[in-house]
Image (cartoon, rainbow, N blue to C red; front, side, top):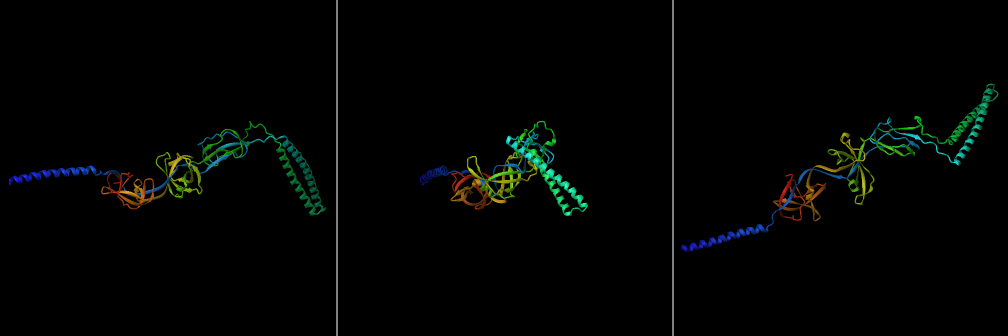
Length: 399
């Protein structure tokens, strides 16, 4: 009997060892073939502020630029002002202009002018004689009227004849002067120093000299530009947006001026969206329809005093904004079956969830349906992530 008990215990011991070994082998096989959790980056769905904006390269522009031009044909004396010099309206002389001398006459024009002068002299002499006769007749009429030898009517008629003779004489004298002026010949004006000979042009505004188009002394035609003036404190920003972005911009929307060279960002407000667009060729050679948007800086001038005309800036116009929005990182979104979707982390597994989103910017999107605050989603999921896959979250922003 004792031998049987011993034999049974020996058999049970051997089977127990085999069973334990089998369990260990099964566990090892399970650990070897079951995939380990996939390491992923997690982001938290949060509630906060969301701004949607459009950004493009722009440049500064002085709102009112005044161009000083040649008022007549003549010689411009050397301009002593340089770009950046201050000017005071009505006081600072920006240019001195000498009217040009008369042109030389060719032989035909000179002969025609001399003939016109001779004719004017003859007419003037005849009219002068008529005026003398009319004056004598008038004096005689006055004397006869005193003795009632002629009627008042005859006296008035002779007075009218005298007035007509005076007017004719004045017209003939003016015609004679015009004929004489045609024969004025050019003279050497190099030594002219009379201040009364020149046109002295004062600054029309107070500000600074922006550009000097002509500084050296030279002969200029009427209307030729000499220099430009403007007030740097009267600055605006022009940004050309793609037409599909410009349709979202309205006057009064806030703007942030970034990368302008100074500390921090500047604040501005959209003043106008121009009603007409234009075609611009991009750096890649593609024709684009662009629209100019005008922005006024709203910070004190001391904040952007270093900005000047035609400086490069990067305005960011905020076209939509809210301070209480449920947002999901843009990198967590992808398309699935024509809908937006995310992988939400649930109990250590990636679960595919379709979501409905609203507005979005370059970093986050508004969540309308499908997620709640505090959910953790996988950011930039790779092809290895699938619905139900075990994952290990490496980082959770905002946790």
